[in-house]
Image 1 (cartoon, rainbow, N blue to C red):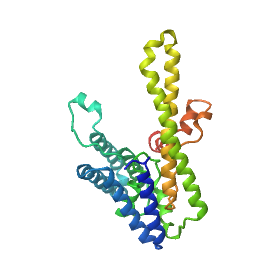
Image 2: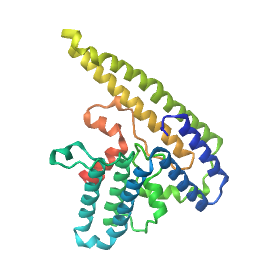
Image 3: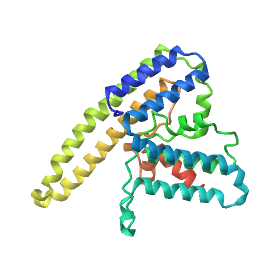
Length: 288
């Protein structure tokens, strides 16, 4: 099931309808767990699901154990390195073949964003930023939230848990539903129409670069800008769709774009482009 598809919208709408019928917070959490499970089943085969389950099981164990060994000084970094090594193996990056390691494992869609969320929990648990016990259901719903499963945005565990605690009180008003439809429609238009037009123009220009002679450099620059425009419409359109889907369940997701074309320099551009990933790297890589 592609995110940019009417089947995803229908799946989200139907799930939201059942979600609205249920009134209890616990019942809604169970339903959300079922929805996440069905989504994974729709995009992965049994082999992929098995490897994903193994990755999640190890991650959950590391998340639980980190507070117990926080004073050791080594368990937190070892957990991060160990999970990163497993992530690299599961992704089977090309550089592994250079050191004669080729595991030929199945491709797991969404694994990168699951990895980011797991690392955040490990680090925050080790630093006692997350003090409360993380039950398996909450862990699964956070790491495998169907609205953020494929390509984010990257939501922090603390924000997710706060929203999940309010699910029992959430109701989708007519105004909220209208806003959801408007943003989802805008997202589809960007991802399906505008992104496709930009990609078509890019694919038209690239094979002809050699035939433009002295103008080749200009055409190359134009094609690069067009491809960047494609990336923006494709990714921001996707983000509009999944944020809309999250709003159907009262799960507000972080924004990923803030008018990047208004950036004054490269650093300002990065702060406006894929915002949730930039904030993750700043919090857990550059200033952990």
